[in-house]
Length: 117
Image 1: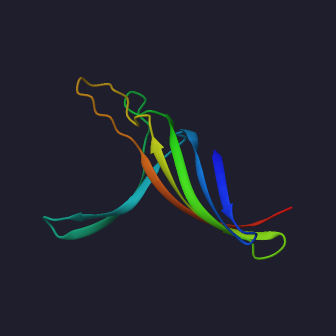
Image 2 (image 1 turned 135 degrees about the horizontal axis):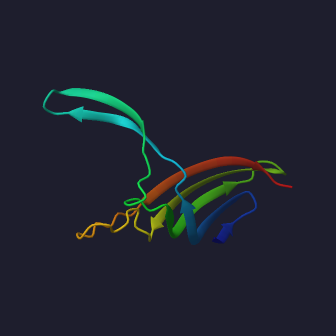
Image 3 (image 1 turned 45 degrees about the vertical axis):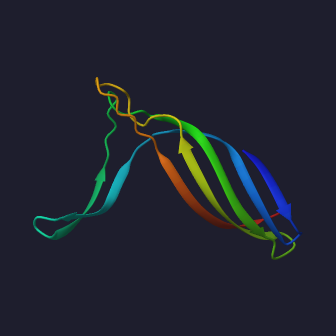
């Protein structure tokens, strides 16, 4: 990723832009669902099995982000960033006559504290 930083010694803003790549190792899904006919809510937690005919294991795309860094001591800093991952690879293989492209788009908010050497 390329990064551009601006600001002072203690408080700095930055933007990042680049590419990413990923590989599907395993998957789970969890959540709540509502049945309108019975007006019941139920929770689920299950493994999602990989189907080699349907699912694409490789993912790649563009990533961009913006954030702030605050140096609160000589060797310590805190950082907060929002990143957007834009997939350019369909998560589903085209195995049927009707093309059904599905792309992952993810917004991530991350924060951390780190030590500067």
